[in-house]
Length: 528
Image (tube, rainbow, N blue to C red; front, top):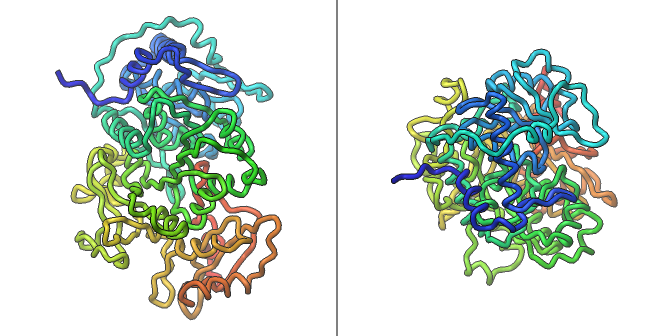
């Protein structure tokens, strides 16, 4: 009597025990768990009637709406595989992903259909389902989502789920090569969502705001975990700081997730100091190492209880979180923020994670010796889809290699110092770009920053700070450099500073440093 580990079972449980509880809020629309469950079953029935069987792949390109949430359950409870698409990718990348993923059907939001319109004749798609959006017409030929559901019942073939079969096929951003399809199983998603439930302290009465794109590692597991607890999902089509602050008040948001970029947008919104937030929302942040100064602002200005987590799409994604201990309560707010900026320790259900030297031995727990984070266990991907060579390069000797460089403190807490490709080696000295960024975020005029290596004739490469100033910011390059030199070793301080209007980011708010580096390293090497 062994039941397979699958997060799909939590939908059944929620409908059984919380039928009248509000499950989903999407703008003016609300659905109880009974209504949500009925719509999910209608979607499964419609997909089955359209020829989608167990093991088939269905691509979905939707923002954070109730339609997207329905797809996670309606597609997957058929035993089919959902392929969430990043709607901000280029037409070329989307064509590659859809073809490579072997998707038979595409469900798309009309607001984001333009790139699909360019490539639709090249796609081996059997049917397109369109979610209409007022003011956004599309030339795609397909059936509307509601019509698709209307002509279907709520019955569909019962499928025997193997917990090791694919649940979702999630593509990486492809910043350095073609996007890679990360194969995530029912078991891995279940255990990652269990981590989400436990370590983010998800409760039945939580009201969860989907600020994080659901397409990104399945909303970090939030699409499953909130349903498991019978909490309420609040959908958000796009990150809009004034709207988010309004929702904190009107919907009593108690939990959300987002990249440090989103945190930065919230604390710097003009209304941030005026909004009355009574729920002390818990906010998990990851995607890039958050600066301690940013965490301090989020807690001081908005009263957010920041929880730092860490992971990758390839690990479902959680493998570390910054566990908060009572003993930390007695230290200063600045010291607390510094600790919360650490990635932390293993989660309960994911397996083993450590920092190792090149020879595979673990680094000393001294907060100084640099190594690579590696992990193994329940949440690691089954591999890259149709790519055994890249899979073998990433998973070696039973360990998945993250490419993130970190140290381990005496208490076992891990702290990322850089991505391997982002580490700056100047005159033989290692400089962590994130360390320099952490200092820059303490400057009152700095809104956003990225530190990269640029070529230098004498030192090989030196750090350069690229900065977005706050609207009232008037600081100069010389003042920024001097500010850093007063706060850290001189060789680590930026040798050059450039002020820009914005920084390149992915759809999930990650800085795209490779695009900044290309300005200085592509073609003949330039010397600043």
